[in-house]
Length: 404
Picture 1 (tube, one colour):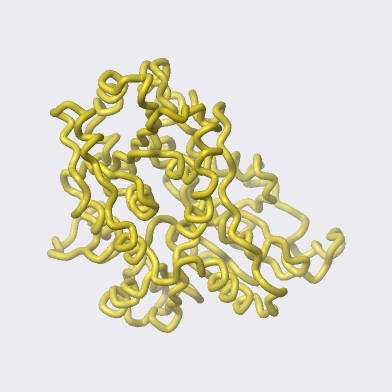
Picture 2 (cartoon, helix red, strand yellow):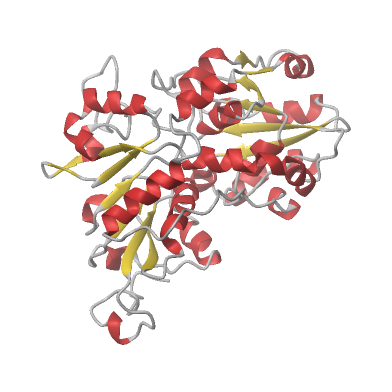
């Protein structure tokens, strides 16, 4: 689809002439990146099956939005070009990032696309005063206030702690904030009974231990500042005992290109590294894993919450916001020393207090679907149709999705 190929249905001034089911409330799912897509697809499912609702997707401006169009098209989503989306009115807009949202004409429900809000606001490209305690990203006035008013109609928070941060950083937004829990975590927990299926889908034998290496994006990430770690693991860990998978943040793939990432890791893949495509649901790998080697990214926190043994390789500069689950995990997990033999470090790695990590991730465990759905129907002006269905586990991965 090009920017010139505007849709005539189900949105547009003449749409009623062409639709089969008329009078639907329209929901615009605003996708920014593959990472935000994962969260968006979980949540849009709460209303998508309602016969009174029509969901359409658009891809908003973002430095990491490569591959998002293609991913949504593969899923059969109806895509509205961004240039058209910002010229239409919708009954609800749902987003898990911020780019372009002031241009959307709809009541907006905005949520995080990771494990709560743990990142600090970066300095602008032209400098500015150095702050001893930079604001927490996503709870700051720069994101929340536009044209003198609060931008989101509903701001979905995962934890009451975020309300306290909001009270300090942007009290104007308290009136739209609602604590709903973490839908990603709830689905991860619902997937735990399928651990054996996920392992078999990844061709991990029962006697093998799966080591999952998880990296967020940027120079301070694990993949950014220790590019030698994966080759070291492939060399040092006996292949008959260990399988190794690398879970790279979708922004890594978007910034460097799929061909380049696979070229950098070609020798590792030839030696047996599992390298899932960023569009694959990463939660299956977390459930399948025995050990997780991670950084300050969200996946490390989610893995700790479901009891995986954790080794962290902290960034040299990035420090998650105090009170966030990422801060708890990086502060308490065992440290990986890449300059020492790796096998004994894996053997000594321990699981964290998963109840403490769960409590840092959400204070509404298992309830995110119910609470988010309630908010969405309130914004749509519709009554909820009966009870929400159970939380589905994530799909079993296919081995072809996890190799180059």
